[in-house]
Image (cartoon, rainbow, N blue to C red):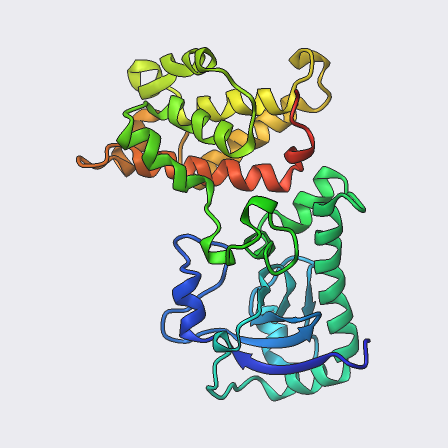
Length: 310
């Protein structure tokens, strides 16, 4: 363990949850009336806040072994849900109480825990910077549902165009949807492709967007969601160099994307999504925003920023 590393047991403040609302930062854990107690580790100019949780069933955590609670509820410290903070106002002054057996076990193993947390973050940063790339499937297994993607600013990973912005000010892909969908009246397929092209600089020309126009409204008959189809077109532009059959793993990548879309929205069919998300005043904008979230997460977890086919 790094001897200079400081740690405390605290809760995140209500100010943190105001700045990082779960409806936007959905991988961040939140409890409306009882914030999570966290292990706060001071490291490299920021704090790493690692929540104490129950029912942790993945390996990227410290699993308590000695308490009755851990034996019944798989309790531990969840590295995948840690958050990175630089503002002391995000740390609550409220007292935190944890299971005494777990506290004693933590103190005995604090060096191991801190080293594991820092390693988990360092390997994420190294992959995102391209210094030490993980295999795509390994990266996804570790970080697909991690909160670290929300803290690129604090971790030194923000894009240059956002270097002077605070993390909460960095626009997300969904922030572009209103401009195209409501203000310029493009359909769902056209909107998602235009948003992706603008954000990730695919280099599409105006006529290229017409290729997905017919997918709007589920191909006009409520079939496959137009936002899904538009995103799939962008996926092809990002990954395929010559042709699909000559692109190793492309079929699996597409299938995985459709699975992610269905898990997030509940269906891939326009008729079903209309029932759930369509509103009279904004039509299917919520669906397109969710589709943008799926693409943004997929882009990050699959390393697609390195694969744009020029």
